[in-house]
Length: 159
Image (cartoon, rainbow, N blue to C red):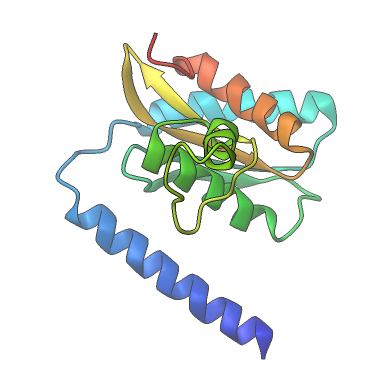
């Protein structure tokens, strides 16, 4: 019963995300080529460390551009990666920074977002083009994987 409820909620979530993305006027800034280069770097870093993770790359509208779930990554890693990407794309902050600001009561909570590290924004020429979010190991390790991908194509800050 719980599994059916979870599947139903996830289906509604994806429908919401797709209709939200369609309503966006902004064209996707995260190209397939950029996502591929970032994914290759992030995956290589995770494999070097021996980490079984899920890596998610989205555009600035929070639309999925690419995802990989490495062998051995837990089933729930997808849920956490999407929640980290949501935090990044709604706030422009890393998911860890989002969490710190929530705890300090400096910003409003984003429904469905998580407050731990692993999701980072991706900037190219000072413009945020999307996010990379990783889940499967410790939060700071997830963030290392995401940063490895982001820094291959740009940076994690607008500076």
